[in-house]
Length: 100
Length: 481
Image 1 (cartoon, each protein chain N blue to C red):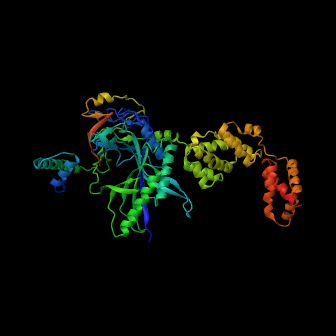
Image 2 (cartoon, one colour):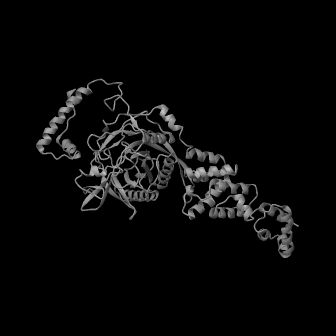
Image 3 (cartoon, chains in turn blue, orange):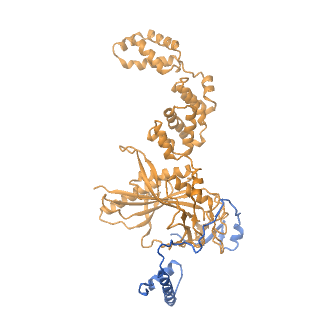
């Protein structure tokens, strides 16, 4: 079973870090690579269980989503929310310029 | 061999709920920035999404209206990316198990040049529920961007078609049919200026019989005109590239209405890696057969069903499609027809002709028509029973539009009643024949074209009030000698 364990190489880890916007040193990447690859062993154990005929669940609890009525229940609390924002102007949150 | 164009559309329809998809903040358009951004829209720590029943109900309506499979169980997933107008760092959407599965939409493609109008069925791949992001304003804020999160969390239904369209005209006809349908069933206000209905077009070209070409996706087209222009430009660009020996790279492009061209926003290499996974904050959405049936009971008769019914009543496919271009239009037609039963064709002609022309002149929508359907029906009834001639009816219509009132009162007040008294008509004809003996002689020696001249004289003598059919008959008989 262990021969089929997936593993991540350094490039994979660098990519995941970039997607998560994490700046990591080479040492940190090495550590993360070892830790992540350790998880694959755990996954391999679970893969070994026979799940034929078992419908996959999308949530750990076998329940259905409760719904709310379509009603407006929230009032304007902009002032309170923006009191903790680093920078606001004309009601807008200001962030470093991002243009794709 | 000719190039074949292949187009698939993804449409984001904003659902017309009062509150957001996962919170009780208002979705009203045009509010002051961030006054409708509650703790959930802002992704403050500790908040949890709670799904809006009204959004699900609208998705069910759409599925029912397109004959689609409605999933008894569907799942919300996180689509991960970083952008300041998405404070959670992920958009809640649906991936593997969307709420609405395969369906279809019948479209009417209008005539173009020598090619007659035709009907086509476009297959729908799926439709899923998701939340909208906020808005970034890149104007001058000291080199920074301003973020308005009022729109964040607004419910959207993303409707994905199969690549079934073969021309820009078909893509526009599809987008219009979808635009009509979502408003018809009351799930979206269809306001394109406010971004309530936005189209992305996947476009590729290939030679028939060969695999589909590489596609490029044109993002965020918010008018039918731009959709058409962008596709036409993109198709020309792709064909020219391929014929010059080049190849098409998969890419996302933006349409610039000022230049009429598309430009690359990102290529496949820097395409997003969204790392979808089921959202642990949301349990699966279950839709029971009973709920589906309750929603089905609230659906109005659909445009395509109405079109078929109108055609059975003798209208052309074109007339039927114009009369079902909106629910207000169809309601107007049916209410007017109820006043003048059986006058289907005449009623259609009046609405597509006089009424529409006058609405256009006054820049009004059918819902704002100053004449009610029953007022129009009053005119139709009097044409049908011979009380007014067609030209008299137009005069009644003109007065009604400007001053209001009902048909019978206007006909009475303005003396527009048509003369159907055969004695009176015969007297007029006799006088004309007596006063124009030379023309009568010419006519009798074979100059048939003069008939119109006599009709004109007789109409004038009756002040336009003679029943035309009756007048023609009397004239023909008397002129024959």
